Length: 260
Image (cartoon, rainbow, N blue to C red; front, side, top):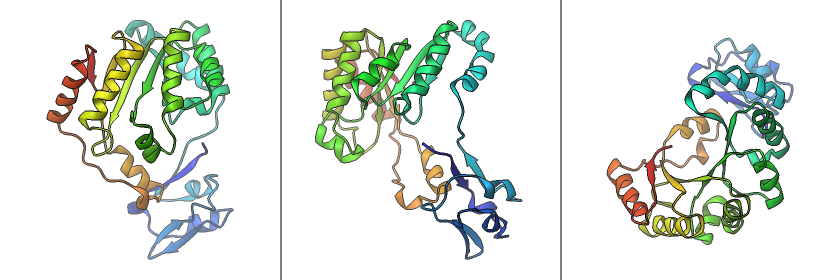
């Protein structure tokens, strides 16, 4: 939710300029390289400005919906030619509903197709307000067992599943079901079958399903945020396993795509 400092330890020479520049005193030199106390760091970026080796960079910035829309509008000809549009992803766009609404409304007023990529964990009033300006919902299904869902994400899936049903039945906004396939966590036959059964029963066979293979792009980001101790190292699913899961979902008479 706030700007953060990315740190590439391989580029750091331990010159100490970042230590002098940091207004919070959050940086020290340890074993020849700088190290950040993330509890003190406010993400101001002074250290990145003075780093001669570009070992430090500021990720994230505060912008207005209007500023983002200027960039969106500059590419409008590509949306017209491709039949595409703008997708709000993240992170979680429903965590910033006022900003999301402002940006989506600007897009809709300009005739640009809008999509929302969401985990669905938000109050219904928030969901309803944002979806007033959304043409398509990309909806994540992480686990169908509420106990397992809470174990791995910190919250039950009750609200998530209720919201997607209301999106379909009350608002009639088209949706794509997206299942991030995490080996060892949610890729069991039982969970994939339960997810497909929910989708066909509650959302119907007009809802396409995207199976999203796990990738390891986030691991380097944990290292850059100096949170490598929190990283979970997972081997991505094989193509054969993804094909097996695709067949399971297809057996419920749903259109399935790997990736998306």
